[in-house]
Amino acid sequence: MKTKYTVENYEYISDKTYEEVVAELDAVLGDVERGRFNDILAAAETVEEWQAEITKQLGPSGMLRFFEVDHGRWMGFYGHRVKAKKYVYGNPLIAETMMRYDTRFGLEAPNQIMVYEDADGRARVTYDLPSSIFNFIGNEELTRTAYGLDAKVAEFVEKLTGTTA
Image (tube, rainbow, N blue to C red; front, top):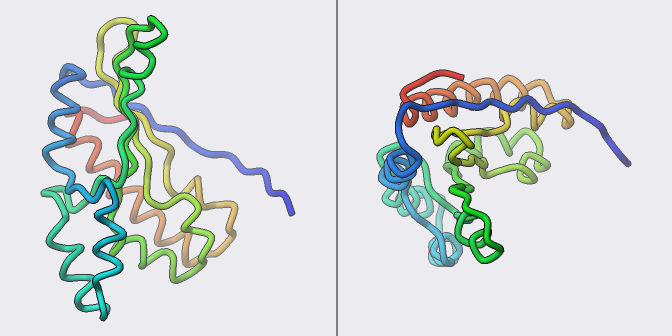
């Protein structure tokens, strides 16, 4: 089976520097990188234990960093001066409210966001709109819930960048 669909991409141009946006993002995300997520999962015996431990890990934004890729660092090995970081972030307690409608939601969860500096030295934040990513599933409940996630992501990025898309 093959499905084609259209994804909407949002991009915010900030008056903040790349370094400021990255520092703020790092400050508001909890961290479950380097296997910590799987360790928490393995240690939990009940949904209550799972939720309590995940909740302790959430950053001030209510989100967790699952994985980070410093594209600028590795591109530097090839002589390219790039400032760009990709974050895989989210909240499994929010994801559950969507994945319950269709397991395929897990293909694109957690969310992805990228912070980069453009050729003019401006910090930009870009992401794909969650509801547009999940529209291939065709589940009305999931789509309706994804619109709520769209609003949460937009609020998160607007706070981070100090601007709108």
